[in-house]
Length: 379
Image 1 (cartoon, rainbow, N blue to C red):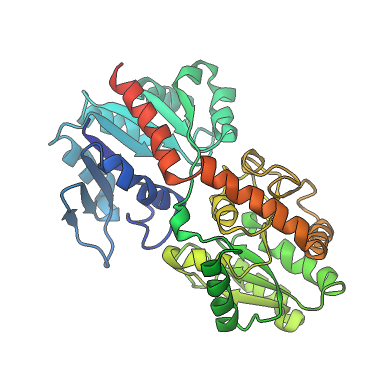
Image 2: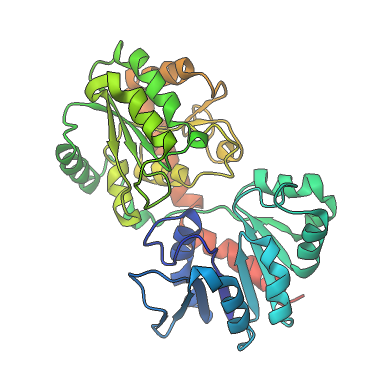
């Protein structure tokens, strides 16, 4: 099979500026390309050439302004057995027309079949042009089925994952060493670090953690909330919400610290600074990939029971789930509880690491994808 990946027009591939889709592509590429020819289309970036070919993988990059049209023209010049379109159901019709003999696989990483994003006509056109649809969670799968029950045979859940070689667990010798170095670098020695990593947006909920901090430091005066991220992946420019976060934290002295965007290849080390990782999402997450990363790093996880999060986090088994997700006092209660129970924290973190090793490495993700590709190739 000759396979093409068509990334979204938001971020380049490889994931030099982050992005869950781009990081997933980076992870599966070595496994897919070791078996089949692979071409990856993405937008251009000043740090990357317009074309690359290392003998196993071809990268073809076009400007964002003309990306969709350029990709359509390019795939028409080649024969791809499988064209995997990432998260853009509206574009399937165009790519199918450009390469009518290819099998089309669409992956959904968000609620892209919501009525406000896709009309009935657009959705049905996409379904009729697509041979299989993969979703990052059962939650996303069900958002499609609720609207289009007839799509059930096309839908396949393909969870994401991590490269565990990049994530030494916090209790390993190298993990302990990295933890010590990072905590010294960020002046966190002898602190209980509550870690948030993600985009600074209201839907991600870091303001809830800032509001919880006064109720945490009452019981744990050595606690510090470390907020890592920018308003949009590599974009550290402030907006109204970022200004709001800084304003909320202004009276909390050094108990809240902001660390701006950190490149994806540095993130595994950042996780090792934490005593607990909190995903405070207020929206229905498709299934945030930070869960896989924190699980791999061996950091105890607290997350909201929103969207697909509960599909990989089982309460009091490999993490803690918060149902009252709008309530800062509930975040404070659960964070205080886990900080009081370091042995239990280790127990759930150890369970989480084992789950990643057994089910959520990029080798597992690749196997699940290849199963879908081979299935549609036979149709």
